[in-house]
Image (cartoon, rainbow over all chains, first blue to last red):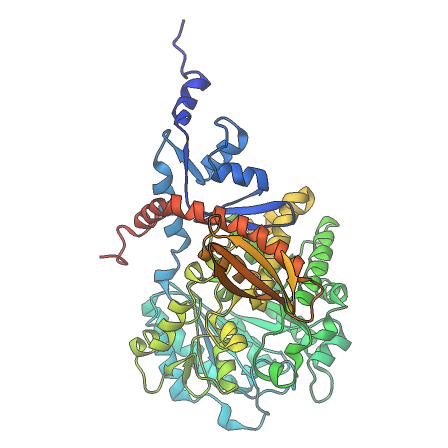
Length: 489
Length: 101
């Protein structure tokens, strides 16, 4: 008779008899009866109150399914093995592997001029004929030099405005210069033009085609809603956008153009129509974005017309509709949910600037303004247009890379807003999926950290986290779709 | 819990909850009410003033504060028990990197 390859189950359980110890964990209420419990790297379980208390008071029974689950996911450990600490350390480091790469996204504001007069504009655009608001060739050249001093192996250069195509010559200069420098630097280099597409000439399309440049546009929904949100002389903004999408796709490919929507008060009751418009135009994703409290959105009062709680209702209604579209055979994802799901369910750390701690400002994204000023984020330069230079890091024309990226302006904001050591955030089960967004809190509360109990950012994100986790827990059909979004990329 | 004047007061035995625990619980409800603390002979009195406009009463917020206190005490237990583990995990995470000398 051959010897048995394995001992009895009791053999393997014997080490558990001495009890277990806790590993670092956080918990937050999911609803009236359940808690989300997460470990130091964001892996989570949903437990009822009795199980949570049993876990913390060392009353879980060896051999029970929940004991094994919590041990396998490093919430507890026992005499069986001490490998949990090393594995958690490895996971922790993996989740933060992006940090040494430093800045990947470099935004060039090549002009503040714009042909639109959107009341919600977060940028404080200037009218078309004010050439003083164009980036100079010298500033562009200096900015490109700074871009390639970033250690990031992947560089994305995004052209912003105003309407950046109003200064197409500067875009051509930056792209040509960057491609030339990259022959030696050998980074993974991408270009994106964030444009309303009204200036999309054949010359622009050919240049994009020759240099593999993506286009990102704004589409707020059906024609009447889009034109009301985004007024333009001639009242033809919607038609120009749709025509531009069609022409760009014809030459550059369907995936060459993405679109973003902004939620205004008049959008709130029309989320299904907005999503239908994206489906009609064959988009495979939609980003349900709230208004940001910057620029004209503040000056015109647009940002105050609804709060995070109302936006959450809009988001939940939209997400329900999107999930139902998926069930009925049209694959479309909600982009913000997809980012959060990747943070919730995968070891990946998406580089989404708003959901990072340390904050993504400066170290994930940076803005080179039309006048050479360098800002820690797009919102930072929007705040500067409103009179605050808290997030101005320097100027490409006068300052070195070290002076800009090691500036006290940046380092103090990063240190003071670090979520893991911020009141309320430090004990929140969602902290690993969230961010600190110092610019938002400075703009709304006057401090980079902010009081999270009164933070619209916190209300919005806690609402999104709770809603997605509830769907994952309670709806197997939705869970299947959401898992697909998390693992798609 | 008692209603008094413009607010609602809650008495908490310090032998059950320390001040840090109570303050953390109150901070998490800062969007609903403001809290004023006073202490006499081992009893902490928390005066709750609900922010207006609100559909909540002082008692509603007091009930939430009590529930939050229970959570905070569990969090204190976890923090105390896992401090060494947290330091060890972070030491493993940053060992062999240039971040620590």
